[in-house]
Length: 444
Image (cartoon, rainbow, N blue to C red; front, top):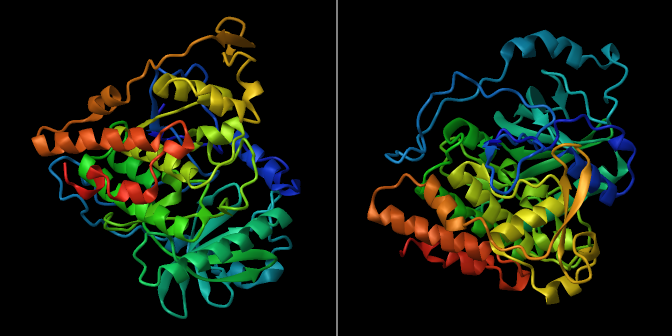
């Protein structure tokens, strides 16, 4: 299964707008993340098989086809603009301008039913729908006051989601104040407003997310190591800003990382799941599953280290085109992790609130598996799990580098990932340490 095509939201969300608690929303979101049955630790799941949004327009097939991330790169060649659907604009503008033509502005699931050509807040003319996530829909619009294009995130009509949106606004403002020169690679919020009972967040517009980059330029094979290095440095700069502001992002993955049209700059986006580091209640469903740190699944206290883990998973995916831990649930995620990193220390499991869901009293792992014949779930006791997957060999298999310099860079990349994926959060690399790592500094 390809990492570029993976979609956690393929099934329709039912009754989500009636859910009152944030924990329930996270659980519902987790249950949308689908994986092909039978994918085990030895099988590769391609990054292109992950699809994030419920609704997603096709990538414009008229964009210039260049092998942007080939090993002979002009690494960040610019491409043409995505078209914005003028035919749709002309056909809908009259209806959008006349509210009497529609009685209900929300669909059954609480999403705002945006019309192409509609003007929001008296200044933003909708050009195209960009897609939907669990918490919101996103449109591209033209700001008729400044003549700029913007992206507008319309939060779903739900009290919990509205509060989450307000919290996101607060965090974004705090991050911008701490980064006045816009050098730390976090998305900039231009302003926010309310429209027909929906909180709307207006952002600078960027070209595509890293999942789209993988689909277009690195499907099944990933992107080259020099591009990964550029992106890694920028991601750790964004994490350093979050830590400075005492914010945990809690949903880092390729889908929530946007890149500029020239592809040389990325920005971390979607702080809808973010929290203050002091407000980190234990829940097993925080963070999209494939990028979820083990301390979340085990029910341990967590902090900034969960974002470092997610970045490690994301960087692996960018280079190899494969998803590192494609578990169909938390139990199988833990199995995948142990098969790569070895057993969890008993002292760590003793403190874990959810350890009994996955381990017996002797700390033998209880693997919840699907019987291949009956298709029923069975529990298989695994007394000792030794690492059977080698991070180094998997990364080297994805490497097509020939030069000594790039080979040294790949070796440094392996070391960086190994430290990002330390089982114990207190042994995991910090953003500051990552920024001085040889892979990032280039001193290899």
